[in-house]
Amino acid sequence: MVAKENSILNRRFVQQVVDCMAEGVFTLDENGRITSWNPAMGKITGYGTEEALGKTCDLLQFSRCINKVCPTGLKECGLMKRGKTEAKECHLRHRDGHDVPVIKNARLVRDERGRVIGVVETLTDLSELSEARRKAEEAARRLGEVFTFGNFIGKSRVMQDVFIAIRAAAASDAAVLIQGESGTGKELVAGAIHHNSGRAGKPLVTVNCSALSESLLETELFGHVRGAFTGALRDRKGRFEEADGGTVFLDEVGELSPFIQVKLLRVLQEREIERVGESVRRKVDIRILAATHQDLHARVQQGLFREDLFYRLKVFPIHLPPLRERREDIPLLLNHFVARLNQKTGKRVRDLTESAMRACLDHPWPGNVRELENAVEHAFVLCSGDHIELDQLPREIREGNVSLAKRPHGPGRQGSTKAVTADTLNALLRDCDWNKAEVARRLGISRTAVWKLMKKWNIPLQSPEAD
Image (cartoon, rainbow, N blue to C red; front, side):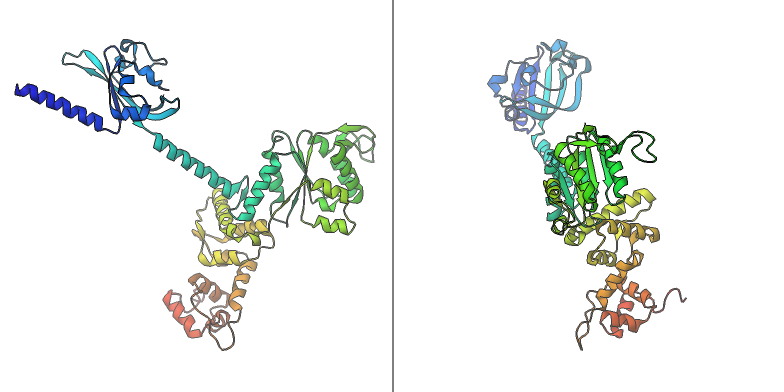
């Protein structure tokens, strides 16, 4: 009697444990019919106990099973051969019709004689984890969009506006005029527009309009026929024909002569070209992207550029800001160039010292991103450690940094040592051949203050080269 009561109590305890589990647990009999269904299964699947009991597990329409098709009975199930399944991620179909990601486990249950009397399966709901993954992936994707677009890098508001403009231009077939100072990346914008457009599978042909004379540029753009001029021994396609179906990028379009401007206007209006030396019109399917560092509107006012061509080219204008107007992007760009040069050279430079970074942030960068990239390459030649030092940057950047230190602090007033770093002091000592009085004068502090700083940072009182 006592043993029977204990058995009943044990069964109740086990049932309460199963009912309290966060994991879904259900059992099948030897015929593959559901015999128990804990509350967690209802939460995961949407099916109540009464709806599930007596049904097969086909009710849940698992996306992965041992068999390709869920069998009609347990005897045909692959679980009979394997005895259990390894934990696997799959989806079940919720009562409402949506898919629920789960981890599924299944195991045969045998009696004392080894006969199969049923199956126990557990399900772990991955909905929250799946949503967290999705959000993480979306965040990573958005972060990539915020900081980069093709070969562009930037998190500043002005660069986000550029990214938006590139996407809009890529979705259109309109002519685009890209304006910006030298070194801002106008050719990269043209490439980003083309490679994100419907013409991405076709050629992107670039022509520098300032590199050729008028006659050579005409031949380069439009091609020629045999005998058109001395040396024209055969017919030759021009760049417009070569780009058929794709994009032509006219760099430095502000340098075009009036004659070429007229011919280009016809291409934009008619989408037709004539090779030099013939009068046959040839249709071309091209998109025109143009770029210039000049103020084309001012050139129109001066009579140097055709007004009708100007408006044909600037259907969709994009302005690239100079680097000095997006200084918050400088650290990102520096990290990008350092990583790229590490890969190229095999070095393991981590980043810039504080003084080197400050010099880069203070520099006006008249050559824009191109100048910044060249500065990092210059530093890599000299850098043998894991940080780029101030004295490894080009002279104009270093001197710009020192010139800030030379600024007077006002009559009869000593400057503060708070802004002075060990790297800055070392650089100034080298520039001044360890003349502490000159260093003090440049920093606007006393010579005693210089001595104290040197002692604080264990900087030798004499130049190491002198030793």
